[in-house]
Structures are given as structure tokens and as C-alpha cells.
Length: 134
Image (tube, rainbow, N blue to C red; front, side):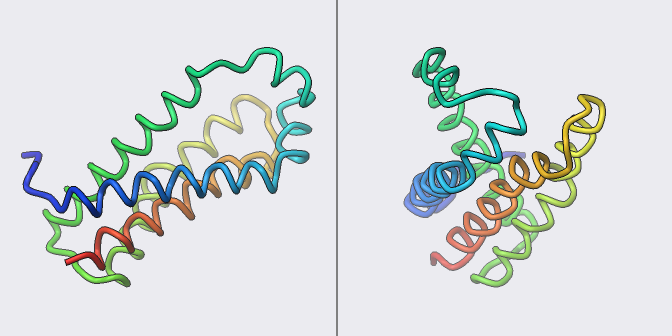
């Protein structure tokens, strides 16, 4: 059963930090990412709207909320336990789901590393924040 008896400040901070990680990640890796998806900065800029950002915020919120629940169910507390739980969630659910999608789409392993890497780092850091916050 989902719990709403969570440290909501930790969840909120995890959401914000995950959004910062995503912005920094794709900022640093913009060129290889654009190459991987076959688009230019101009093409992205022309078609950009607020909708992808809203989806990204909702995604971060759901991940932080569910990660906090998984950690609560498993009795996982502490920075290291949170970090490991986030890493395991990436291995079990996110990273290799991206791998399957990228394989069927014929996308490069490099693009998989870029797209799934942000989730690896984000889940690990969110887990650490949620786990470390009393």
C-alpha cells in the first residue's frame, strides 16, 4: 500500500535536485545527445514548448515519491542505503528498459548511456537524499 507518511521535504528536495541533475546532464551532453537523436539545436528550439518540462517535473515527482515508498517498505534508511536503493531501481526498472527501447529503435549505445545515465545519477542521488534525511 502506498504511504503518504513520508518526509515530504526530503521528497521535494529530491525532486528539485533531480531536475537540476537533468538540466546539467543534458547541458553538458547536448552535442552528443543531439547527434544521437538526429536533430540540431535549431530544430529543438523551434519545437520546444512547456510540455516536456511539465512531464519531466511529474516524472521526477513520481520517481521521488515511489522511491521514498520503496525505501519505507524495505526499511532502508541512511545515505548509503538510499544511494544503493536508487541504483538498484535503475538497474531493475529504468536503465535496461531504456536499453530495450533503444535496441528496438536502432539507437546507439552512446545515446542509451546519455539517456539512461541521467536516471542512474538521479535515482542514486534522490535515494541518498531521501535515505539520509531523518
